[in-house]
Image (cartoon, rainbow, N blue to C red; front, side, top):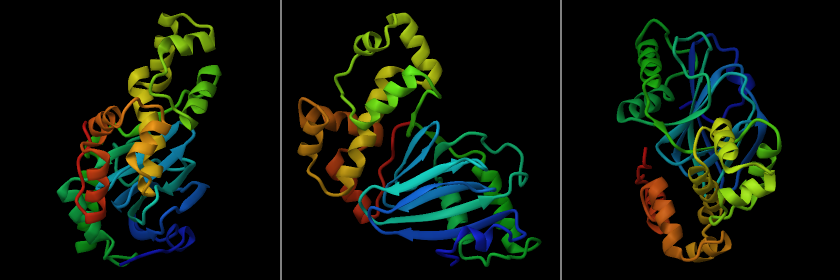
Length: 268
């Protein structure tokens, strides 16, 4: 398997698609960086957070984040060892690749292709079996189901500043009226501006902000009760309902399944 090599070692390899496996310790953080190639960053174990200037993406096991070429991004694990498989794809390798970051579900076929791809040498035979695997992988990549696992941010302005401030200390009880007062906006103007800036409703965004704040702590083994109450939830049940809605399982069961290698599916 091609594993744990630096960007300089593979960037110039004359192949349209390169597959690399990397394993990271719990709590690992990678500073903002970018690649000339597009990247599919696939979590085979553990949970990671990937950040860009336009938002943050939560990537549970058996899901991946697509990062377009030249996109500045950071990555960190959420308190448990992280296993990844990476595809680095030339910008002109195939038409129709996404132009924005997104979390996608790894289908059984895509998983088999990626795991096979990382066992190929970097300079695989482009006209032989290796080239066929990579070509099919490119076609499958374009049709992977998109998952609602991002925390989008408005690009600039007071609303952007408030969103970033809230993400550092989210409050599940925050209301549109609270934010309208902070921003001196009418409710109608706020809701229109918020959806234009994030693409989702305030209630959806608030839930995701709470989940993203909770995941690193839960991944480090903090009790669910402590995390839920610290975030401002009135009860563990209310927090669990939110968590289950977004990730498909209660927190304790979710992380137990992650540790055992069985991945629950998030809602689409």
